[in-house]
Length: 262
Image 1: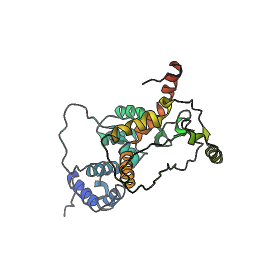
Image 2: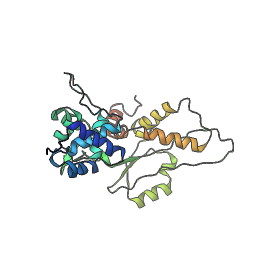
Image 3: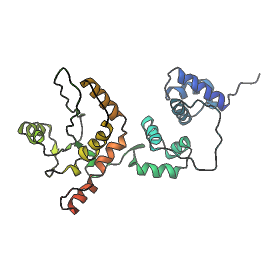
């Protein structure tokens, strides 16, 4: 009696069934291996198909390929690394349907290097230690005249933090300085009236101000809900570029003799 040998389309259908059952991309290949043995799909292939299902691509047949090289977004590569940072160039290239050199160039552009078999952000100098912060007023129609205050929350850091903020009075007040000393944070010197080299001013708040145009809020809750949504809409690269552009902006400040620039 002949033994049933599943083809790849059948196995993809099984994966889709697991996906609909809320199985994870890590569980699925183990179940397939237990059931179909040598005929099972590889871990990399399973992850690729789960990624497609998450993007609402449920076509199980192979798509026709054109002669033009396939293009992919940085977000696709970052998502794959978030799922499994130990994937090789070959595995990433297979999933993205590009050659290894293309993946390698893109990883270099994202500032990623491989350490101990895992892709991690390359850290040069001290930029990765910088934390920046500031305040931003968002007005709303507070008919009840109820006071509401918001305050920034900083994640716990295991490396030595370098704090970059401007010289506004709340930042240089004695209680603030004393508290920063208890945290053992280093405070980066900041010249007066220099929003050009404060990422919160020249990058974050500028983008926020554009998005706030024509917005109208009637409560503090509306403000926070909108702001949380806005922050979530920005990817990691948006914030990373704000810090990584600092050396260039510092140079421009020196070259312009402290004058404002755009």
